[in-house]
Length: 488
Image (cartoon, rainbow, N blue to C red; front, side, top):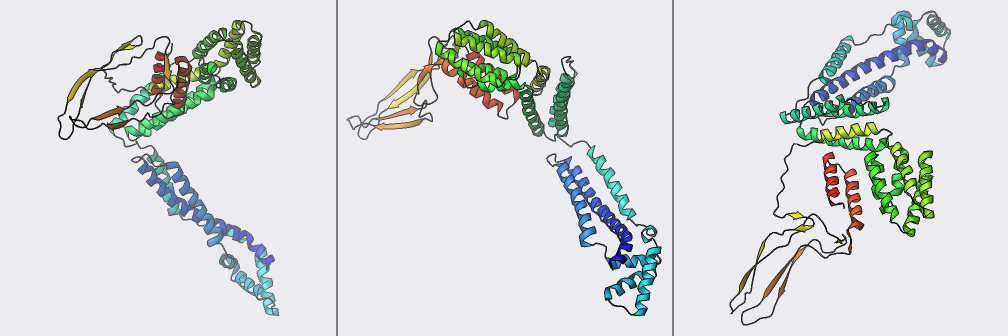
């Protein structure tokens, strides 16, 4: 039996291929129709994920064809023999299979089996067989593919506000792209154009203004992340180490951003602080610099950090060593600086808001002094069998934006910040019972500490929160400017 089936194997393989192709055409035609429907619907509902849906439909069509051709409707031995008989076997093939399956044969049956073997050996049934595919269905599949591709170029149906907002943002993007940036390397230019292209694509497909704004916010976060990733590894390693010390927190933040101006300013401030440090503070900073130098791969920066560490340990003037560190840091900051600059410019442009902001208030302040608003309050006494008294008073308290020397502020460990109303009842008298209501809103103050001690902590926490939050790019600059006005 096995020898005879081996002779018919080429024909069976061809039949299996034909069956698979038929089921594949049917399955992919159905998948194509579903994909066409998804693409058309996505022009009205942009939230529909076209690629995952269409990919799933195509994969399902393929799995259906494989399952049907090789498992559910596989080609049998009997079907192969009948096909061979139709190609000239004249029922010899099916007769031979039946006789071989019977077991023992009589002389006449043995002659019939021998005749079947001879016919199978001399005839190439696989070559004689011509596969028949569903041509009409194949044409439908081709038409569906063309329609699906064409539907992909259909404009997204969106409201006028979304279109106006998207067009304005696309114009800003083109302005940034049109600006010449000779410092761009090929790699930097590639990254920048990819970021801009992704944003343009999302803006063009946004159906509503809300969706377009969400696309801008997401792109801004992606560009901020790309800015961080473009900073050299040495600067990021150093920033992570310096973050632990309050005196170097500002420099750490500047290093994370890779901004040359901020790094230079932060280093100047740090050198001024070094000049006023006592031995304990200098030793602590020296130890921190030693730890940082171990993770630095750039030799120039590593040697400069070690030189500054030695100056602090020996009580020498750190100015010269500090200047060398600053120059090495600025050299590292130039890596991908053109990319960061362009990304920041693009981020600022698309983050511009046309909303008018109105600030209302009645207080004014200059140089740490404020003028309070006038307040009015009433109080009284009531009681049974007695008459009440009432009074009216004026008072006010104001707070300015500045601060005077020496100023102290309260930490945020104050309790009772939520506020509450408390009532105290007095004793009965000839005029009735006295009731006093205290309105508490400010809470209890915490520890009083110098202004400079907590300013940097508050600022760093606020900026770090903004970096890790999905907020418009302009808000980060607004908060940064606000803290700048509070800095001495």
